[in-house]
Length: 451
Image (cartoon, rainbow, N blue to C red; front, side, top):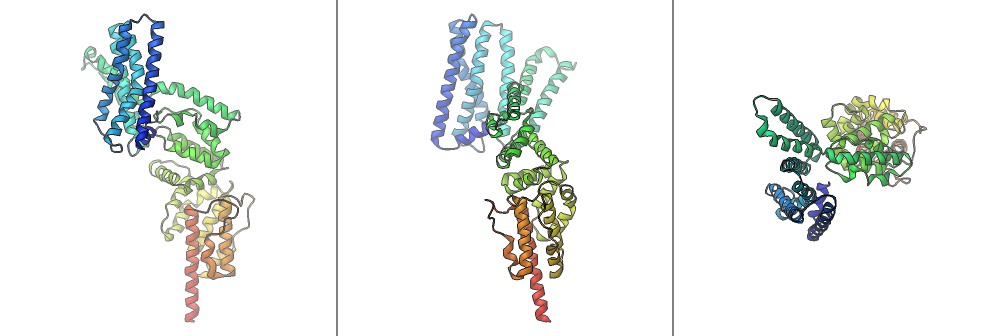
């Protein structure tokens, strides 16, 4: 259920390939032994038929895997690609195929043909899902899967009710297409994932640690799940509220999940709406590469985003010091509306001070903006990032007032109460402020020399 992780494992050392083969053989041997021992106890199955099912199913699974082995792979070497598909098909197809063949021997031939065509379509659909997920943009696989599944079901419906196509000869093709749609959407896996997700949500509400529940959640176990998992957004919100570092890391994992990234955006919307972690979460995302990439992707692909999130994304994309005032002016309203949540006053103070200093044409105008900095607000926690920003601004203001020549060194204040340093767009804006102050100070010195 985690093909990307399995492919990454096979890309490692050669002993990883041997370990994968041994593990697959153990699993297949155990599954076939279970089928061989249990089925004769519950139905009248001849030994020859049972032996035929046990012997044929691994070879038929290997035959199906050949369809994808010959298509090649851009990431895996040929031998590793062949091993990936061969082992995956053995794990996913052989046990179920053995059961289907064994049941077919005691059922009617029509039942055997119907079940095999449905299973063939499901296997082909699942294999295509794996191929889509292992592309360079796995998160784009979800809409493709929905479109292909809807197209398959629509095609079946049109063929059944259309007077142009004869129904009887195409009924077998209909079954394969229906199985193909089921393989793309994977509703059978969703049936066991929903109760597990709900049970974990209930456990979180009963006081169990969300960090421990994360490893058991279907989103962590299944890269192929497409249908929405109930309670995932609430779990993400609870995880971020309990521990922002761990919760944020899980949020980014879900954001990069091929089928569940909508829950991550929903959790961010909820956290921003609640307000308590709005600035802290967005600052945390801006500090991490995966977080910055995700925010840029959201800004480019999502039409309706919270204004505060879009403001952080726009500020994060500023790479020219002269563009700061315009970007700040466009998004100041969002920060103004969020000024009453923790960290909001400090972030608004940073934007207003930056805009005032960067638009100042003379040194007195810039220092006047620095002298107007307010004192600490009740929501300012000096041990978090907004607190560090507050200290940095006041250190810059103090340096400009006491010793203007040392202004530039004040942009990186000592972080004595926290284990991280300022990064991302807040540090870039502080650097732009200090650079502009040094520029204005140089102009004043030149004017004094000329006078």
